[in-house]
Image (cartoon, rainbow, N blue to C red; front, side, top):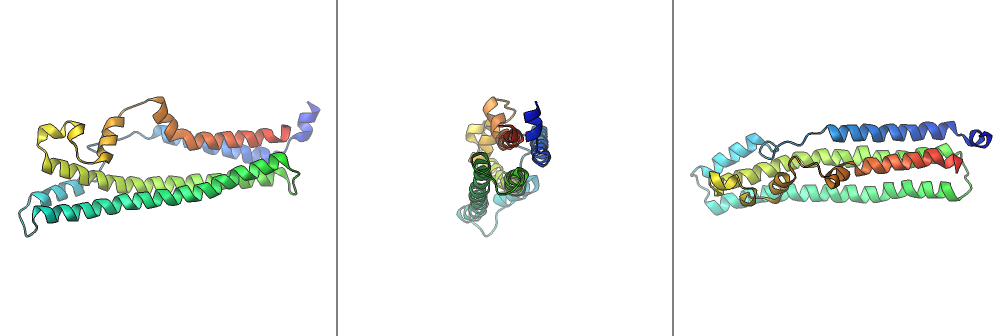
Length: 213
């Protein structure tokens, strides 16, 4: 018991508890988000305006209208892909650095107090999770709302009312995915949404226990 108390590091303990608290907040936040039905999960005004424009007879023919809509659609998709690539690249650097710091602290003599390494490791991970990853998700959701509005407007324009009730006749992969995962509570979907919080919790617990190893 005295050995454990002699190894206790207050600063490392506080940093680790902060990481655990952040992961709990992350879990509660993710679990509190209720997915919207696919028909509501889009820019409703854009959908209505686009559908009216597609149905209106004007100087544009059908091919020209589709080219204009698809150009906007592709731009949104490219923005999402570009943003995801940036998040992946920064995550590879910061999360990798976080794990490297932990590995060095666990295997080598330290030039500085252990708490400094714990702060750097958990801090780098938290910066990527909250500043890069979650803000990218919010921006992507805005783009997805626009994408789904375009998809649903095209579906209503090209298909009759009966067919649009069947997700297999809906235009666009994003709307189809939302339809297929709507209301699901399967374990893999929950794990996917909570994965980065679980990794933060694991990293914080390991730092908490490292002084006693």
